[in-house]
Amino acid sequence: MKYLAEIPRVFAAVFRNRDLRRVEIAFAAFNGAEWAVWIAMLVYAYEQGGATEAGIVAFVQLVPAGLFAPVAARLADRYRPSRVLVLGYLGQSLAMGMTGALLLSGAPSPLIYAFAALAATLVTLTRPTQAALLPGLSSSPDELTSSNVISGWIESASMLAAPAAAGVLLAVGSPGAVFVAMAALTLLGGVFVFPVEGPPAAAPARDEAAVDTRVRTPRLLVALLGAQYVLIGALDVLFVVLAIGMLDLGGSGAGYLNAAFGAGGTLGIAATVALVGRRRISLPLAAGALGFSLAFVLIAVWPTVAGTFALLVLAGAGRSLLDVAGRTLLQRTVPPQQVSRMFGLVEGLSMAGLALGSVLVPVLIELGGARFALVALGLLLPLVGLVAGRRVLALDRDATVPIVEISLLRSLPLFAPLGVPTVEELARNLEHVEVDAGDVVIRTGEAGDRFYAIADGSFEVLVDGERVAVLERCNGFGEIALLRDVPRVADVAALTPGRLYALRKEEFVAAVTGHPAAAAEGERIVRERMPAGATAGQ
Image (cartoon, rainbow, N blue to C red; front, side, top):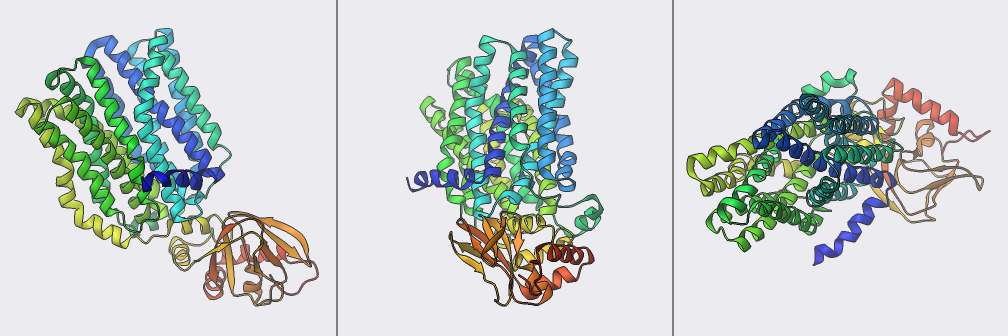
């Protein structure tokens, strides 16, 4: 109950941030479209050639998507993530719309499958790009974790709601109508994200060689996140096996079992709230993996109708906790210039895992029966955990990459020219400052000892009592006194409650004056902000 009471606070923390609100609403539209078109295409393929053709079409969509995901993810490292996200949504909308048009016009199946595969491939752009974008939109690490939690809730809720919505559209229309409707929904997502500016590219093409030689990939954590999709892919087949072969529920029972798994993911909302503000998250990650895996084994031991439904709810909740905790830890561990490509690798492994899981179940059933298949699949995550456990614990213990602070500094023109190691070192030295409305942060005539970067809130700049500027997120103040070594000549006061990150004078001056482009940008800002006739600085 304690965690349930925290849910409104988590939503408020994210949705009061305009940019995060836009990104999460677009992500909800994207998730609904992703699930709905997947179901619609499998229904169409089944109508054309039965289960065999549906399986082949699923494989044809997953393989190119899995191969493309790690390559596509590099785009958000090289180009502004917000623009890549918008273009990704527009591309998905166009591909879904073309697929829908071809379906409605009765075009040849191979052409329809080709465009459906294109849509599935472009879908892999979204999650890695969003993972790279969120730190630059968040004002604190807790806000970033809250964003990840809400993204996890959206995915879990979509697993429950999107199939139902697709079923309604299929009942009153056709697979083509589903694709057209989802194309419009995805386009709406692109419209929502379009006003979001976000941080610049974390690793422009000119810096990639240096970046790749310095960063180690947390491979075992990535493998653990990818392995869960083998189980998810297996469930698509296991739902049918359980419903018809073990529980005598009939074909419709597969849908009910799927809904139970989705409901469990939605109920996992309460558990993922515990991640917000938590310094170490390896324990929740392990608990999620154990709950997800244990459900498979216990269903094999206790294959009753009530027990299976209850255990699938447990599996869904465990999977939600595993996924959100794992992605949050990966985000905390990987430097910003590698975030997108690491999540691209996860996305690629997820597609491969879905394909592997769907073909693995028939093989395991052939070898030892349905119960053997359930136990074998249930042991997968524990086995990966045994191999990866020590490394994941070490990652969790040493996860000190200040990704939110790095993204904030890089969004300021003054720090944008600096190299990755310099920005990371500055971010580690930032001091967190909370202010209330009306607080005066700096006063005219004081000695300048800090530079302030605005993470949240609005601040007014006053010269001789007259407002000359209002500064908000992705702006900073205090640089003139530091660069000119003179007292402040302006007051800066908070108009709203806000959050600042302060950098001491010595570190600021050494970093900015030690880089020609940053020094030139500093001089430009000084000339632009210096009050007319003043000889002192801010």
